[in-house]
Image 1 (cartoon, rainbow, N blue to C red):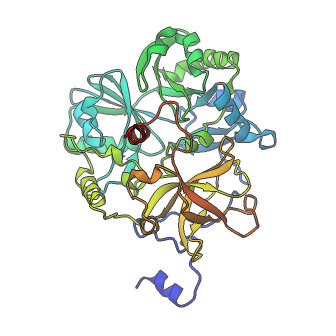
Image 2 (cartoon, one colour; image 1 turned 90 degrees about the horizontal axis):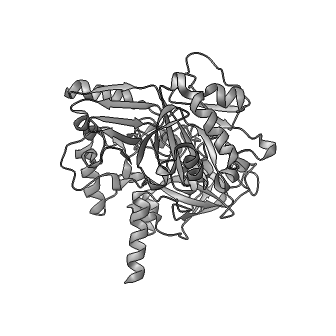
Image 3 (tube, rainbow, N blue to C red; image 1 turned 180 degrees about the vertical axis):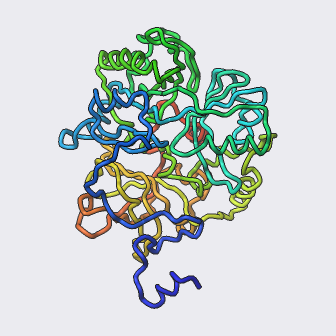
Length: 464
């Protein structure tokens, strides 16, 4: 019997950092203490890097708050909360076009005669199938099957790949693998800074900037071109679920503003502006955020990324043996994890800003704390709060919900209770009810592979 079990048997309250939620899957538990958002100020110092766009976002466009991401300052608010905050920024995103400073997506280049071999070894999907001037969303896992990073992988040539990375240290991992395996390849961070142009008018902006070529680009296609005489790489990708593009500025330390200024002017000419990254829309699209919805102790099978574990990849890759073991267990009806990520539609007052805590989820029948919310927000189009949350797999299994990706195929009447802060609760101190929902809550303009597979499956069912 564990010390926590003994404490409960003795009637003692669980420690607030470690409530009843079963985190036995994890070596390092999530801190589930509910501390809210204290009134503090971010220290700006040289230990955290300023991106080449820092002066544009903070000094000129006057972003008023930031977070740190990949050890860089990242703008996370332009409109004051009293003027609508993220809600008004979201309205610009879904109605016109927006510019995002995402230079924090550091670019890790793998280049050399055996670059393909190294890349194929550190990602689960088959990198050999990616053609030059194409990209793909991939995951890199550790030997235990935990997700280390979920970057966009860009292939510029036969022997050159760029990892556009979320918030975790992937470069050191790839360098370490390279040292151990002795591939003939070099791994470095390069002087490239991306920006995103997202929203329904994004293609019009790119046509004005680089020409009609962009109208022929496939999803995840790449284009080498120029903006204002400066070399850039354009991809049709993004983090919003809306139509969008990313512009990668080469030699960004000296060329950042030469590209940024004409891009922003063109965005504004089409009725748009700079905003922070649109998390409200990415949650609606079911796009995951590393460190928030998943991390290095999360299996892809827990967060509906099981389609990243292929049946037919010939090459070996880090985590292959463990991931294939997990896949076989699940296919045989044995789910080897305590929790699974699901979508929730929640009652309560509109959640209109970032959550400062992993809000607790409980079983409404027993009152026991059983899970936690990772990404909540109000959805204006659906007129409800939505969230991604980790809930007990056993509870889903008990209610005959499949524990593969099909859990997202339709809304259900499965209920949980979510403990929102008083500002969002219907009654102070009382949880609100939530039901397990279809994800994505709203479709993406460019569906992911999982989304497309689900759409195809629905189409097949309707045609039978």
